[in-house]
Image (cartoon, rainbow, N blue to C red; front, side):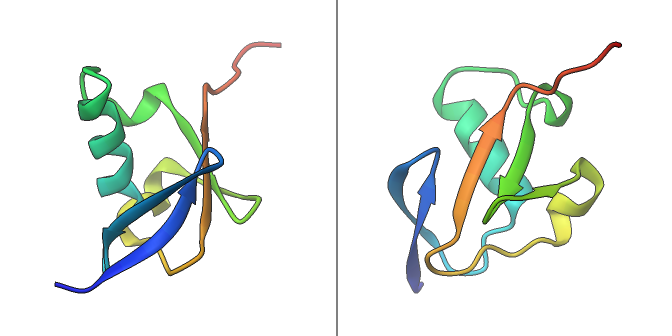
Length: 75
C-alpha cells in the first residue's frame, strides 16, 4: 500500500494513502491508550476546523497538517 507524509500536531507521521481523519483520530487515541471517543477531540486540517460528522468522509492528503485539541464547551 502507498504511504503519504502528514504533520500531526507538528510532528511528521507516515500514514496509508486513503486514511480518513476519523481513522487517524481513532488510531491516535488507541496509541495513547485512550478509549476511542470522537467527542473527546476536536480537529483541524490545514488550519480549517473539521467537524466530527465530516471526519469519516475527509480523506487525508500528502502534506496535510492535522491538529487535534480538546473542545471547549460552555459559556
